[in-house]
Amino acid sequence: MCLAMVIEQKSIKKKAQAVEELNTLLNKFNTIAIADLHKVRAIQLQQLYKNLRNDVSMMVVKNSLITRALKKNRKKNIENLAESITGTNILLLTNMDPFILALILDKNKMKMPAKSGDIAPSDILIPAGNTGLPPGPAISELQNVGIRTRINVGSVWVLSDTVVVKKGEVIEMKVASVLSKLGFKPIEVGLVIRAAYDNGLIFMSEQLKPKIGEIKKQLENAVSQAFNLAVNSLYPTPLTLKLAFQQAYRNARNLAINSDYVAPEVIGEIIAKAHSHMLSLSSKISNMS
Image 1 (spheres, helix red, strand yellow):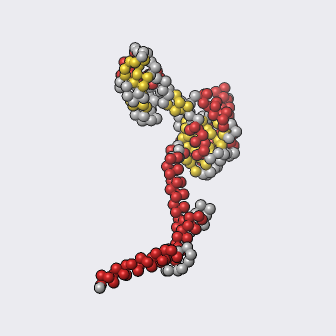
Image 2 (image 1 turned 120 degrees about the vertical axis):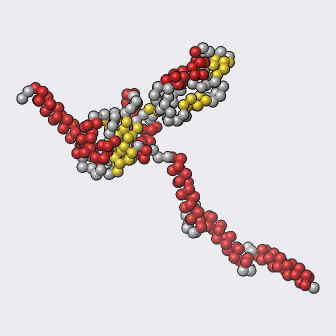
């Protein structure tokens, strides 16, 4: 047997062993996530590892090995996670809820200077005011990206708020250079989950980004509707008992007045009602005479 064949067999055996070990790890955790490593710096990974080491196992594994392990694993639907493996990834293994994991990763993102070719995550606005830059080449550089300027007290000032790049647009080199000089860091860099497996379900990246504002509004509407239903149906709860008693008292009072039921609490209203009826009857009799 030639040396090349021996080396190849050892390599195959080593890969098979790695897949088995990875497969064993997959069985120990409820949530398996594939996260994008694009532009993530080593210092960020080190900080994440430090923050999450008690809750999340992080592994950089070749895509081919992850794919083989997922397809070999017997967990329900887990092989479908392999469809999201592309580019450079990191494997996250945890028993944490995938939505919580996504929120933690989002909070650990870092602001970075923009580079040519980056996509603006939101409108990039240069506010009016002092840039702190001395007069010179900076003036023409700012004007080249559409920023109107003036010189005041030895500094370059921006005359009005100016959006230099809109959300979703590509940041050009000249814009990136200006942003860098102004100290802007518009690019968020961090781990982003491509897809996550949790107890038979696959969640894609967009599904793991709950819209907190919309959810809060929905919860507020649900609480309001539940409260109104409890009040109107006289369902007793600590929050509705006081209103229920007040409503019952008003209803009983109105019933007593309308039925002329004499009680100390309503006698004044009954007499006032009788007096009003008497005056109305007297007026009608006078008109008939």
